[in-house]
Image 1: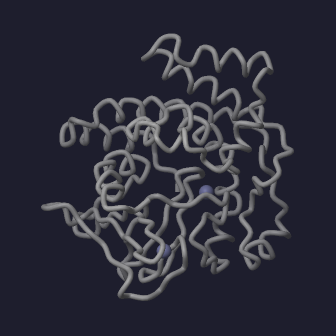
Image 2 (image 1 turned 90 degrees about the horizontal axis):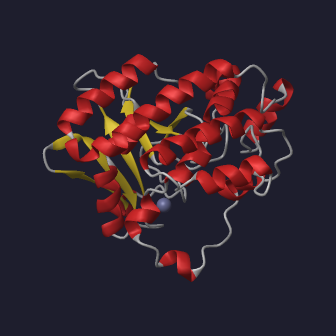
Length: 279
Ligand SMILES: [Zn+2]
Ligand SMILES: [Zn+2]
């Protein structure tokens, strides 16, 4: 569910104090969330219409509601949002994104192509593999491309989220948009694990002893680690496929997890997981 902006900003403020090394990223996230709210309100048209009668069949077939393997719809609003997001980077580093903004405005780069490539990435070539790790892990433009679709996809969640939640979806990728989760949470009295999609903001329940990425259910090859003194945040790893997912568990403090913010505030866990050979 979409977190309330006011609450998110308050959480960000708290984390600025508790995790000062994330201040820059939290500042960026704050700007994104404020813009997101603005564009959410502006959304009039349905960017990704989904036929109601197809929902059940898609869910049963393991097909996400929005199909990014072909992209034929008009993405006017996401494009406008993307251009506004680029300003966040431009303000920090003048000149950095001006060129890409110009090319998109002039039609030299088609925004639809950027989105298509983001969902259907070409195989990484070697040059990319040796790219500086810090750069690769936090590419603002890539982040903005993803974020640009968020308000439009949230509409799909608002309209069909309940039906999807009841459909018994058991895949490790998002039933709304097909992206893989990076973070999730444990909540409810039963301690259900929910996976969160940063792309569209949807959360779905998923077995606790199962790898979302390869489906492995063998307890011996599934493990987790935490960082000293923080039992509320952990990393679930799968030794069959070497993937990981971050999981927060706030049941003890009764705090509501804001997973957009948590994803940023737990980047040290991503680094640790990468160092251990998980990705
Ligand atoms: Zn999604
Ligand atoms: Zn796995």
